[in-house]
Amino acid sequence: MLNQDQVKHFQQKGWVGPVDIFAPAEIAAVKECLETNSRIIKEADGQEIITFYNNVINLETPRDHYLFHKPIAELFKHPQLIQRLNQIAGENLLLWYTNVFCKMPGQGEIKWHQAKEFYTSSDIDFTKKTLVYSQDEDPLNLTVWVALEDADLENGCMRFANGSHQRIFKILKGSVPASEGVFAGISAHKTVWQKEQQYSLSYEFDENDWEVESVPVKAGQAIVFTESTMHCSLPNHSNRRRLAIIGRYVRPSTQVYPYRWQGDFIDENAHNIKRHFCILVSGRDDYRHNVVRDEHDLDETEVEFQLMSNLVRFGHVNIPEDKLQLEIYGLEKQVLEGDCQEEEPNPILHPRKYIQWQAWNRYQGMSTIEAMKRYSQLVRSLPRKNTKDASSRSNTSTVNKGVLKAADIESWLISYLSELLDTQPDEIEVNIPFQRYGLSSAEGTVLMGDLEAATGYKLAPTLVYEYPTIEALAQYIAEEMQVLA
Ligand SMILES: O=C(O)CCC(=O)C(=O)O
Image (cartoon, rainbow, N blue to C red; front, top):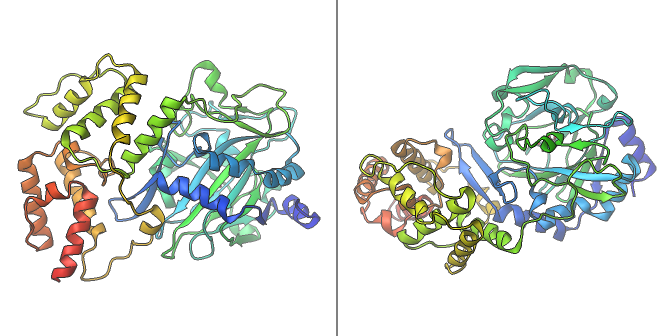
């Protein structure tokens, strides 16, 4: 339980922490889910970012991973946590939201904001409220911020304006472009707003008017804060990643995504929330405003499909042949989008698109269930790779002068391919074989020639086949160059 001082601290300052609740094994289980299902990519400016795929929302997003991953749901249902929340927020609580905040080395601050208004008005449509609080009770949207790794002054710990929850701050709607707003410091983390929101909320708030407290915490410790407490986090100036996950709780009297009952399933971050649900973590729900369940309703076939697609997505399997790669591509499209409705591309003008179109079209008429089964069967039979986990990769961002790192070659290949394919760099994935991008043998040879020129090392044209992904090719060349240098 929270002791009297902690309760008083929460009431007076609007937050309390660090609170010791979670065992190392519980934190490790959550990190494992996230690291297995994430990838590190480089933005055009060289900044590393980490992205996660949500298997219920079917989108790359840091949000709501409790919908699919049990250890994450368990973390936010933890009896010792919930007892403490009951002390300060009453008995009846719904978990409705989680979000991963991963600050990679070099990422910036998150600016001052509250968790109340952020969800009661949207930058896309101010009339579309994510949360509608009951008129009979004070609003409640309690945040539990859990450190999955140590967070300190160097790598971007949380900061709070003590007592700010007792004041109302004017919101300056739409006055700040999103690229300069609350999340500008992690703007590279496109999934936070899916590049849909043009403006960010800002507040008439000046930190100099407040007693501001920075709160370093150790991995496994939590901070609890109210919906109205002004909070922000420092930039990450260290070479260590800062990984945290938050959970948010409302009373069952609050309507979450009420517009879903009118058939609108697109939320303010452009996420499709059709399969979103809340978890009743304590007490009763007498209101029935929300979809409340203990876990997702994906059947066995879909769970298997999702797990198998993660193996492909995050490069945990070797996909040796071109034919197999196209089969996997086509089946996945059939599962996620159904029968191909696209017009046949011109094979001469768009050879890559044509091959993919053909691969998808092969499955015309196949049911989603059948396509899922075929996909899973195929992927299950593939050899597993011994991939490095995200945490070990996350500390490799510094480049030694004079020695070209695999990451540099990866960046070069990403921008080369994005130019060649006329697409955005963030659409190029380092674990997807070159053939999936429709790279012809002629293009492969030219690519190796250009890479030779860029690196100044003699490179065999066949390397593009022997090391068929950006990651594998970059790794191989970087290692070879070190031997030669
Ligand atoms: O983890 C962070 O850096 C920021 C978290 C935050 O802003 C929030 O929980 O609302």
